[in-house]
Length: 107
Length: 117
Image 1 (cartoon, rainbow over the protein chains, first blue to last red):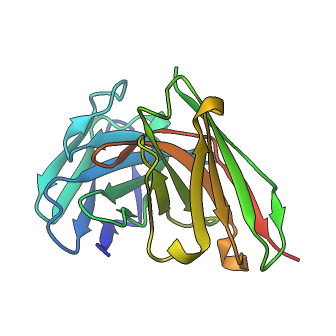
Image 2: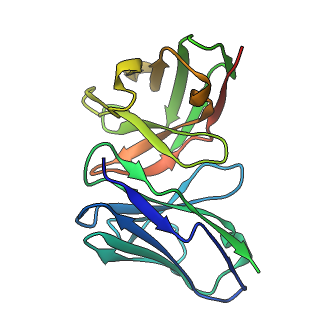
Protein backbone atom coordinates (compact mmCIF):
# COMPACT_ATOMS: atom_id res chain seq x y z
CA UNK A 1 0.00 0.00 0.00
CA UNK A 2 1.14 3.59 -0.64
CA UNK A 3 1.79 5.36 2.67
CA UNK A 4 0.87 9.04 2.93
CA UNK A 5 2.84 11.00 5.53
CA UNK A 6 1.27 14.33 6.40
CA UNK A 7 2.88 17.20 8.33
CA UNK A 8 2.52 18.93 10.63
CA UNK A 9 0.02 17.00 12.76
CA UNK A 10 -1.27 20.26 14.18
CA UNK A 11 -0.85 23.89 13.30
CA UNK A 12 -1.78 27.17 14.96
CA UNK A 13 -1.82 30.37 12.93
CA UNK A 14 -3.23 33.89 13.09
CA UNK A 15 -6.07 35.27 11.03
CA UNK A 16 -4.81 36.59 7.70
CA UNK A 17 -1.70 34.39 7.73
CA UNK A 18 -0.70 31.95 5.02
CA UNK A 19 -0.30 28.31 6.05
CA UNK A 20 1.11 25.30 4.22
CA UNK A 21 0.41 21.62 4.87
CA UNK A 22 2.67 18.96 3.40
CA UNK A 23 1.97 15.43 2.23
CA UNK A 24 4.63 12.92 1.19
CA UNK A 25 3.85 9.66 -0.61
CA UNK A 26 5.95 6.52 -0.18
CA UNK A 27 6.27 6.33 -3.96
CA UNK A 28 5.55 8.48 -7.01
CA UNK A 29 1.78 9.03 -7.29
CA UNK A 30 1.88 11.06 -10.53
CA UNK A 31 -0.35 13.91 -9.25
CA UNK A 32 -3.07 11.46 -8.18
CA UNK A 33 -3.74 13.45 -5.03
CA UNK A 34 -6.73 15.12 -3.40
CA UNK A 35 -7.12 17.35 -0.35
CA UNK A 36 -10.13 17.43 1.99
CA UNK A 37 -11.31 19.70 4.78
CA UNK A 38 -13.19 18.20 7.71
CA UNK A 39 -14.84 20.49 10.26
CA UNK A 40 -15.65 19.08 13.73
CA UNK A 41 -18.60 16.72 13.64
CA UNK A 42 -18.93 16.95 9.85
CA UNK A 43 -17.99 14.83 6.86
CA UNK A 44 -14.89 15.65 4.79
CA UNK A 45 -15.33 18.07 1.90
CA UNK A 46 -13.25 17.99 -1.28
CA UNK A 47 -10.97 20.99 -1.80
CA UNK A 48 -8.42 19.98 -4.45
CA UNK A 49 -8.06 17.09 -6.92
CA UNK A 50 -5.34 16.15 -9.40
CA UNK A 51 -2.93 17.84 -6.97
CA UNK A 52 -3.77 21.39 -8.09
CA UNK A 53 -7.35 21.61 -9.44
CA UNK A 54 -9.80 23.53 -7.27
CA UNK A 55 -13.15 21.79 -6.67
CA UNK A 56 -16.31 23.72 -7.57
CA UNK A 57 -17.23 26.32 -4.99
CA UNK A 58 -13.97 26.18 -3.04
CA UNK A 59 -12.53 29.63 -2.26
CA UNK A 60 -9.50 30.64 -4.33
CA UNK A 61 -7.41 31.17 -1.18
CA UNK A 62 -6.94 27.38 -1.22
CA UNK A 63 -4.35 26.02 -3.64
CA UNK A 64 -2.48 22.77 -4.20
CA UNK A 65 0.89 22.04 -5.72
CA UNK A 66 3.55 19.39 -5.98
CA UNK A 67 4.64 16.42 -8.02
CA UNK A 68 6.22 13.01 -7.65
CA UNK A 69 6.11 12.14 -3.96
CA UNK A 70 5.82 15.66 -2.45
CA UNK A 71 2.61 17.71 -2.36
CA UNK A 72 1.33 20.70 -0.44
CA UNK A 73 -1.87 22.56 0.35
CA UNK A 74 -1.62 26.31 0.86
CA UNK A 75 -4.26 28.47 2.50
CA UNK A 76 -3.84 32.20 1.95
CA UNK A 77 -5.39 34.86 4.20
CA UNK A 78 -6.50 32.42 6.90
CA UNK A 79 -10.08 32.95 8.02
CA UNK A 80 -11.92 31.72 11.13
CA UNK A 81 -14.03 29.30 9.06
CA UNK A 82 -10.84 27.49 8.01
CA UNK A 83 -10.55 25.88 11.47
CA UNK A 84 -10.71 22.20 10.58
CA UNK A 85 -8.69 19.07 9.99
CA UNK A 86 -7.15 18.61 6.56
CA UNK A 87 -6.42 15.25 4.90
CA UNK A 88 -4.57 14.29 1.74
CA UNK A 89 -5.54 11.19 -0.26
CA UNK A 90 -3.77 9.34 -3.06
CA UNK A 91 -5.69 7.62 -5.84
CA UNK A 92 -2.79 6.52 -8.03
CA UNK A 93 -3.03 2.95 -6.78
CA UNK A 94 -5.33 0.66 -4.80
CA UNK A 95 -6.11 0.76 -2.01
CA UNK A 96 -6.76 4.49 -1.94
CA UNK A 97 -5.01 5.82 1.17
CA UNK A 98 -5.24 8.96 3.27
CA UNK A 99 -2.77 10.98 5.28
CA UNK A 100 -3.21 11.06 9.05
CA UNK A 101 -4.47 14.63 9.01
CA UNK A 102 -3.47 18.14 10.08
CA UNK A 103 -5.53 19.95 12.70
CA UNK A 104 -5.58 23.70 12.03
CA UNK A 105 -6.42 26.14 14.80
CA UNK A 106 -6.51 29.91 15.03
CA UNK A 107 -3.91 31.48 17.34
CA UNK B 1 -28.31 18.71 -5.90
CA UNK B 2 -26.39 15.57 -4.99
CA UNK B 3 -27.19 14.10 -1.58
CA UNK B 4 -26.10 10.91 0.15
CA UNK B 5 -27.43 9.62 3.44
CA UNK B 6 -26.21 6.65 5.43
CA UNK B 7 -28.45 4.59 7.69
CA UNK B 8 -28.03 1.53 9.86
CA UNK B 9 -27.89 0.23 13.43
CA UNK B 10 -25.86 2.34 15.83
CA UNK B 11 -24.80 -0.67 17.88
CA UNK B 12 -23.54 -4.05 16.74
CA UNK B 13 -22.41 -6.93 18.92
CA UNK B 14 -18.91 -8.41 18.47
CA UNK B 15 -18.71 -11.18 15.86
CA UNK B 16 -21.98 -10.03 14.27
CA UNK B 17 -22.59 -8.64 10.77
CA UNK B 18 -22.94 -4.93 10.01
CA UNK B 19 -25.45 -3.82 7.39
CA UNK B 20 -25.52 -0.22 6.20
CA UNK B 21 -27.51 1.57 3.49
CA UNK B 22 -26.50 4.66 1.52
CA UNK B 23 -29.45 6.39 -0.15
CA UNK B 24 -28.46 8.66 -3.01
CA UNK B 25 -30.39 11.47 -4.69
CA UNK B 26 -29.53 13.86 -7.48
CA UNK B 27 -27.56 11.34 -9.51
CA UNK B 28 -27.90 7.91 -11.11
CA UNK B 29 -25.99 4.91 -9.77
CA UNK B 30 -25.69 3.56 -13.31
CA UNK B 31 -23.56 6.60 -14.20
CA UNK B 32 -21.77 7.13 -10.90
CA UNK B 33 -19.59 5.09 -8.56
CA UNK B 34 -19.97 5.06 -4.77
CA UNK B 35 -17.42 4.21 -2.11
CA UNK B 36 -17.57 3.45 1.60
CA UNK B 37 -15.01 5.12 3.87
CA UNK B 38 -14.73 4.83 7.63
CA UNK B 39 -13.15 6.88 10.40
CA UNK B 40 -12.56 5.56 13.93
CA UNK B 41 -13.21 8.17 16.62
CA UNK B 42 -10.45 10.79 16.64
CA UNK B 43 -8.51 9.01 13.91
CA UNK B 44 -7.90 9.10 10.16
CA UNK B 45 -9.84 7.87 7.16
CA UNK B 46 -9.81 4.37 5.67
CA UNK B 47 -11.14 3.61 2.19
CA UNK B 48 -13.15 0.39 2.33
CA UNK B 49 -14.30 -0.27 -1.21
CA UNK B 50 -16.25 0.90 -4.24
CA UNK B 51 -19.14 -0.20 -6.40
CA UNK B 52 -18.55 1.09 -9.91
CA UNK B 53 -21.21 2.50 -12.20
CA UNK B 54 -21.19 -0.80 -14.12
CA UNK B 55 -21.89 -2.76 -10.92
CA UNK B 56 -18.37 -4.13 -10.46
CA UNK B 57 -16.68 -3.86 -7.09
CA UNK B 58 -13.21 -3.36 -5.65
CA UNK B 59 -12.27 -3.72 -1.99
CA UNK B 60 -9.44 -2.73 0.32
CA UNK B 61 -7.40 -5.91 0.66
CA UNK B 62 -7.12 -5.35 4.44
CA UNK B 63 -10.84 -6.09 4.89
CA UNK B 64 -11.77 -7.77 1.61
CA UNK B 65 -12.54 -11.14 3.19
CA UNK B 66 -15.20 -9.59 5.45
CA UNK B 67 -16.75 -6.98 3.13
CA UNK B 68 -19.44 -6.94 0.48
CA UNK B 69 -20.82 -3.89 -1.37
CA UNK B 70 -23.95 -4.10 -3.51
CA UNK B 71 -26.67 -1.82 -4.83
CA UNK B 72 -30.30 -1.48 -5.90
CA UNK B 73 -30.33 1.02 -8.75
CA UNK B 74 -34.14 1.23 -8.80
CA UNK B 75 -34.08 2.54 -5.22
CA UNK B 76 -30.84 4.54 -5.62
CA UNK B 77 -29.33 2.63 -2.72
CA UNK B 78 -25.88 1.21 -2.05
CA UNK B 79 -25.38 -1.43 0.64
CA UNK B 80 -22.44 -2.40 2.82
CA UNK B 81 -22.20 -5.71 4.64
CA UNK B 82 -19.26 -6.56 6.83
CA UNK B 83 -19.04 -9.68 8.96
CA UNK B 84 -17.09 -10.74 12.04
CA UNK B 85 -17.15 -7.28 13.58
CA UNK B 86 -14.70 -6.46 16.37
CA UNK B 87 -14.33 -3.45 18.65
CA UNK B 88 -11.75 -1.95 16.29
CA UNK B 89 -14.50 -1.66 13.67
CA UNK B 90 -16.13 1.04 15.80
CA UNK B 91 -16.14 4.07 13.51
CA UNK B 92 -18.11 6.68 11.61
CA UNK B 93 -19.04 5.12 8.28
CA UNK B 94 -19.39 7.42 5.25
CA UNK B 95 -20.55 6.81 1.72
CA UNK B 96 -19.20 9.12 -0.98
CA UNK B 97 -19.30 9.49 -4.75
CA UNK B 98 -16.10 8.43 -6.45
CA UNK B 99 -15.04 10.60 -9.38
CA UNK B 100 -12.74 8.69 -11.73
CA UNK B 101 -9.82 8.35 -11.32
CA UNK B 102 -10.37 8.44 -7.59
CA UNK B 103 -11.38 11.49 -5.59
CA UNK B 104 -14.49 11.74 -3.42
CA UNK B 105 -16.57 14.69 -4.53
CA UNK B 106 -19.72 14.29 -2.42
CA UNK B 107 -20.09 12.73 1.02
CA UNK B 108 -22.92 11.67 3.25
CA UNK B 109 -23.18 12.90 6.82
CA UNK B 110 -21.94 9.57 8.15
CA UNK B 111 -23.40 7.04 10.57
CA UNK B 112 -21.69 6.04 13.80
CA UNK B 113 -21.35 2.32 14.40
CA UNK B 114 -20.28 1.09 17.83
CA UNK B 115 -19.21 -2.51 18.26
CA UNK B 116 -19.88 -3.53 21.84
CA UNK B 117 -21.59 -6.22 23.85
